[in-house]
Image (cartoon, rainbow, N blue to C red; front, top):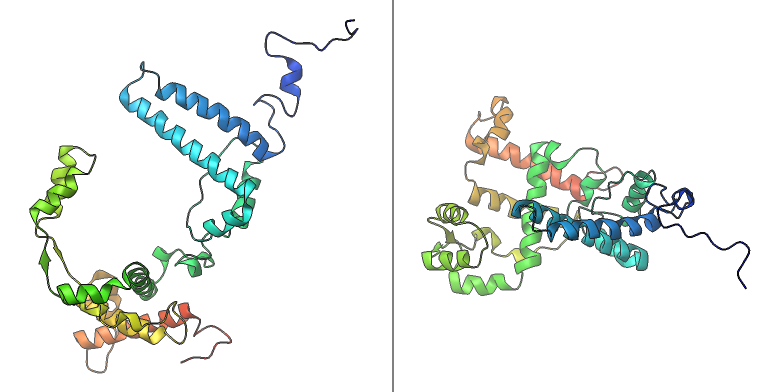
Length: 299
């Protein structure tokens, strides 16, 4: 027996569906993630159809393929947040970027703010200290920028090559230049997917290239990571060697021009200028390490 009030099934789009909170894209679902899942599916379908459509130019199809892959990756990243928020947080805290979720959905801004705060983005990264500072690294004074560069170079070297350094020293020696052969460069270029023009550009950039184990890495394994008030002087001493080996006349660079106008006991000689700069770099390293903060014991 048929129901007296059968469910209406329209053959076209219906007003009731568009009005429903869980309906079409014209009525955003209050739950942003629930809405996003539907839109990801729709956008992925659109992007797939267009990068597979041979009526478009290769450049346009490539752009749609790029969009498809980016949307898919963002969708998967959000799925990690939903299914395993603790793992998501652990991963994000080591990064400096989260995928962008710009959308016309009215709740997108609030959700992005929540996601950013929950992620603890960058808290475990090398530059986490700057994450709580209103000034970006590139707007910091030059002694601070040099200090962070010292920390980054030392930590990245140890984290990446620590156990290899003594072995390389036995084989290559400290400070010895070992030319990179043209055959090695060509072999590397053969593995690259780029135009001949780009390959030629790379060839020119690598003319006269050589490998070297810097002298400042000698004894690097004795340093205690991360930088603290106990290890700050070790970072500073190695940093001085690093700078003087790679940029012997660093005090002549434009970033230090203001130091040339200062009054020094022995005049504005290279040694006096470098000493003044290194003194300010040490102060910056101490601040980063927490030595100069209120309540910390100064060394």
